[in-house]
Image (cartoon, rainbow, N blue to C red; front, side, top):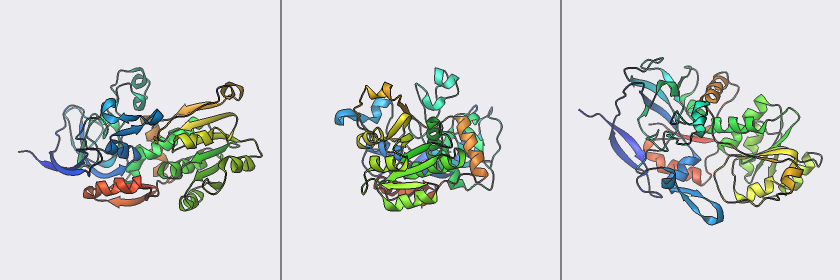
Length: 355
């Protein structure tokens, strides 16, 4: 007899998600079935909902051209408890509280062999290429993609570690900040706020938060930003130069990554500075090619992190060194509302679904 579960699925792009009854998967081999307690709502889910991303010259990059197939259950920030296990799965027991590492690779490309499955040539990520966390259960392909979490760690905070916090953590590491560095963090949304926390806790750098929303900037200050700039009210390049003794920023981490924001990023850099591009807003960028070598600037793309990074984050969260901001909680039936609120910028921090 088939046991049903509920899932919120993208059936048609730009249409409300549909609540469907699906058969609960049965794990085999090293697979583990996780009963979902919390699933984060991510900006990447919005792009899946919209069917793709904006490319250069207004070109729309379809998700289906990247291997995404609809109908799809999105959701890749997943925490819950072990329900059942395949016959060769090990290291876990029924009822264990776990966080899921969703960035599954093919296991054979150079990135996977180096432990960087998040950069796999042929990714199989949960909630993007396979069924994800907007559901009551998710099938995880191997026990190696689960991390146990302590009872004291809030399950909603744990869920968002696997993407938003992991992405922020990796971006800060890619910026290679020193205690005397000046770093500009562009975008004080969920990722930007986490990057501020991480940079403050682990690097000692001087943090300048840049956004167009005063409320978000005040929250950024509470989370550790040393200075804030509203780029709607002030010239961000001029303000950054004033705040850095006219030298410019040692690094910019851009969680928007739109044409306009990156053009501004490139104007506020010190020599030897790095620009870490994280957001997926999209567009194109014109570069002064002569200044790239003469000023030794570095452009770095940063995309999530590896399993080791997530293990480190779990430890930081369990010790209270970082604390993800979860501001909104939704039922599974409210998945469309959650996505729309995030798209409209009405969620400060992060939202989660509680199936």
